[in-house]
Image 1: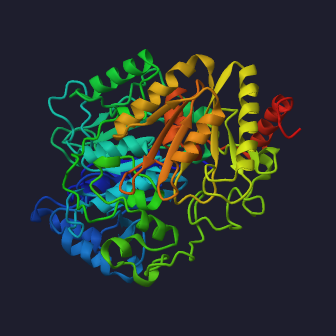
Image 2: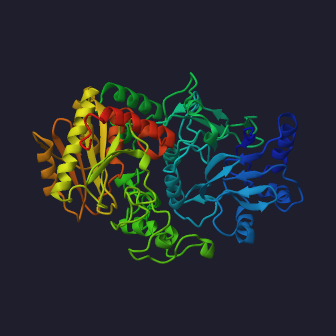
Image 3: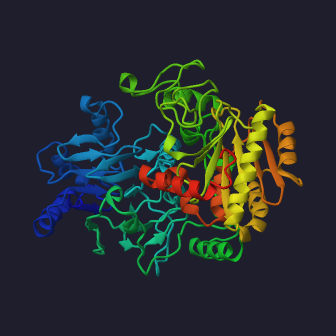
Length: 598
């Protein structure tokens, strides 16, 4: 199937007649085009234009192709948009646009939908603390997009207005000053960022993303009919990322630049920040890639501290950490896993009513949601558990070695090729409270793996996130080049400093003493993170109930150490079953002489 052909335009400002006349002409010469996406103010600036505009909305003039718009403000906006919200055909949870009239769709708030294979994400309007005000977006809309950023897959188009604060060469002013949009672009990492601008056209050279292999292209479009005759219409025929090969996704042109959204504390210019960040990463192994991105949002900003953080409730973590203005409530997270509606928990009501697919009452602990994620829920044995041998969800082709109390398996979406997990056979939420016979077998597994990696001139780091709400434990086993071993402790401490805590650090002559110490520190009433380093050092941290801790902290630190930022999230680097099977067989052949169960 040929890639979709789409048109993009900037602020329409109610000039529909001029816009669609141009589109009819372009469609004849270069079309047919599948859709038009409008970024920027869509409605008129003055009442003089309202009659012409109304002709299209009320069907007296024809809209030539499917048209999607954000920037839902201007003269007449309230009247037409309120009418659209009351239309019976627009009721329910619609992310692909509320129909205004034939071929015209309003992208309200924020959302994500698929158009002809393209993944389209949008943020409509300008920032406001009033989520009910038309023409604005709220913190709820932003949090919804932060959750979308966690989804696997690549976003093709991101529509926003206003644009970010990236400055084109020679321009006297930034395109915009919306730091929230800049942060979202850095997190979502779209292939194309489309925005309305301040009266000019600007197509930026592509730039690399911090922890993704693909590049982003920014296109800022001028208003329709602008006096300076700046370009307001742009044609694009992008191949959907979901159909592209890995090589195509990774391809970079010679003019690709550093990411303009990489900020280092103390810098005031985006490009200067990106330059310094790049230099510091290359100069020192202890530079940690994730925590170099500054938070432009003030720690005590305009957010409502009584509201829940959508990102945390939906995914279990929030990249803003302590700078987030919203509550990271574990009880709400648990309720979300049981299928309770976020709006019901956050606002006490849900506007979708009976169309909502989630529950509108709080659920007891035994009740669960059918889409539970790996590692969540209470610690009762379940046929849905990813790690229980009796589970229908178990992926047995990942097995490497099976003992009496533990088994070794290839990690799903491994950080490096020989990244494995040590998993209790019993349904236990952590490895630290198991009986001594389990600990003895675990020690044998760890010793064997150390010998196996040593033969490859590698050292190994073991770490575990023992959340008190974990379901089935897994001890992460990540091999690293021997030359990197001296940097491990520094990078863990640096990451901890950036999150605002200090590790308890102890050193032992053998790993069994280190684990004995960990078992005495562990309290099942608290979550606990620890790492066992190659030189015998053990780093540990007790997480207080109110503390915000990243569930993927250990993996992200290791990704930074190994320059594997694009693999920090396992969901972004899963392999086919065939590829996983090949990796397992290769590991088994090398591990055979060390396997304690042979």
